[in-house]
Length: 213
Image (cartoon, rainbow, N blue to C red):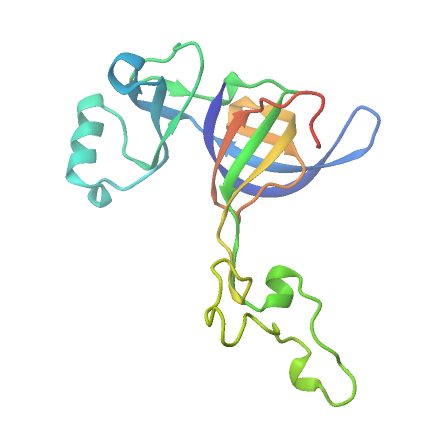
C-alpha cells in the first residue's frame, strides 16, 4: 500500500509513443511532511500522519502550531492519515511522488463537485410524467411517494429531490501515464473527481487484471 496527498490541477493531453492523444488529469502531489507516525503497539495499526499545502501561521490553531514548531515544519493546510507499507519514513521526512512509478495503477479519492439542489429527473434519472393531453404539471414531478391510510408515512430512503454532488468518490484503477518529479506532478489517465484545486488522495490499487476498468 502506498498513498500520497495532492491537489487537482486540471486536465490536458499527452501523446504516447504511437502518436495517440491520451487524456490525463494533472495532480500536484506533495511533498507531504510526516507529522506523526502511528504504530501497531500504540494505535493498533500502522500509518503516517502527513500534511499537504502551506498555511499562514496566524491561521493555525495553537495545538497544531506548537506541534509544527516542535518538529520545525512549516504549517500545512491539510492533515491526513496515509498508509505506506515498509515504515521507511521518519517524522520530519517528506513523502514525494517518487514512491510511485510510471505505468502503475492507482485509485484516486476526492470530494465531487457540488451541483446544488436538483430535482428527481436530474438527481435520480427519473423518466418524468406524460407531456401530452394537458398534463404539463406532471412533466418533471416525482409522482407518488407512499400510501394513504397504511402505513401513513414515507419510507426511509425514498428517492426525492435534494442536494446533488459533494460526495466522496473514488475512481479506480487509473494508470499513471507520466511522473514529473521536479515539479511534483503525477499525470493519470482519465478524469478524477473534484473541482480544480480540490484535495485528492492517490493510493496504489489492490485490483488485479480482473478489474472492471
